[in-house]
Amino acid sequence: GNSVTQMEGPVTLSEEAFLTINCTYTATGYPSLFWYVQYPGEGLQLLLKATKADDKGSNKGFEATYRKETTSFHLEKGSVQVSDSAVYFCALYPNTGNQFYFGTGTSLTVIP
Amino acid sequence: DAGVTQSPTHLIKTRGQHVTLRCSPISGHKSVSWYQQVLGQGPQFIFQYYEKEERGRGNFPDRFSARQFPNYSSELNVNALLLGDSALYLCASSLALAGSQETQYFGPGTRLLVL
Image 1 (cartoon, helix red, strand yellow):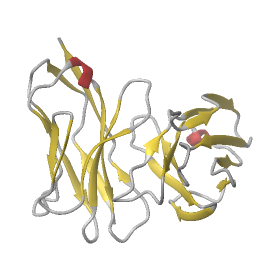
Image 2 (image 1 turned 30 degrees about the horizontal axis):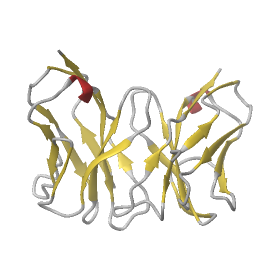
Image 3 (image 1 turned 90 degrees about the vertical axis):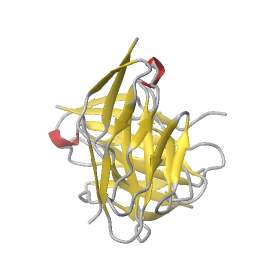
């Protein structure tokens, strides 16, 4: 089946710290992988995506690389800001399916 | 331009009742998807509609139904409400079928509480 596993939260970091949020997946075939972000009081927004192995998605200083050998798509940012405080969701879309599968979300709080 | 809008924002119902949730997609978008997000969990796919036809259905009971209107707005209906239906219901719209190449844009959601 298709599923996404994210690291448990919440995560609390000081401003300018390095961020990693782990995401691994199980899927048939070669899915596309996504990170969505949900800021307080807002709807989910697409942060970045990668559609094939070894692709790197990037946006707003965040990066994630599609690793087929480890079935992973870890989210990283070199220096987090208070404004990055949000809930981050990893998701996949199977190449033979018709729906998205989301992880449980990881809450990030960045303190000044 | 207006984003995806959903109504109502909050709703309280009792077990056994019926509820209708509404979604207006971004202008020009022809596809609408519905998700259920239980507290502490990620969104779970319920339905996707494109050009007024159902194009995908998640693992939800027949108590859940939806439709899309000629103006591409959509309704999600849930019958015989259970306590476990309490959740945030999200609507997302996209130009075409949401998938690896088509970005979906989410609304703020309708929070349903079943007592």
